[in-house]
Amino acid sequence: MAGINIFPIVVVLFLVSNTFLMLEAIDEKALAECKKHFSIKYAHDAYNYIFHGQPISDKSCRAIVAVGKKCHDIFLNWTLGGSTGIRRSKALARGKQLWNHCVLTTITPASSSY
Image (cartoon, rainbow, N blue to C red; front, top):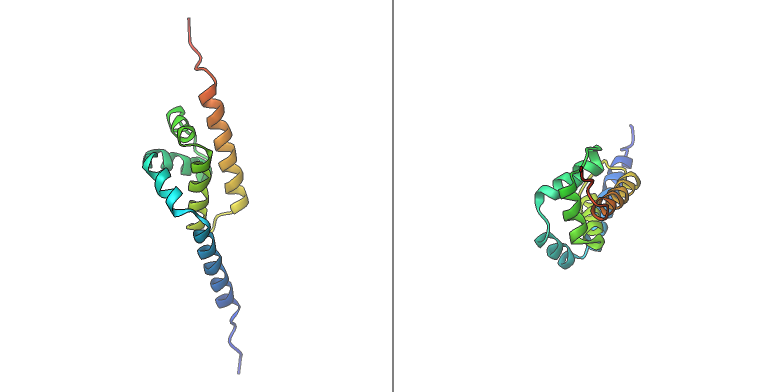
């Protein structure tokens, strides 16, 4: 008689327990405060930039920078905590790239034509 392979069950339990640990690490009060100052449209644009490689508008960048780096990091970690099948290191690198791009976008004066 073949034994029961419990490896898949152990893996699932491990992944679920790590997800709950990540969710606990998020400051829910800070997350709620950040959400008050940020539109879902801009969150969607940031998500598409980070996870789908789509371009982001200057307007969305200004909104991201306006809420600050702390909120940007909170949103990214919250998204990663609730997602499966995402390469965390790649998403964190893209999140950092997004932040740097948006900061440069907001401090660089728009080119004007004379």
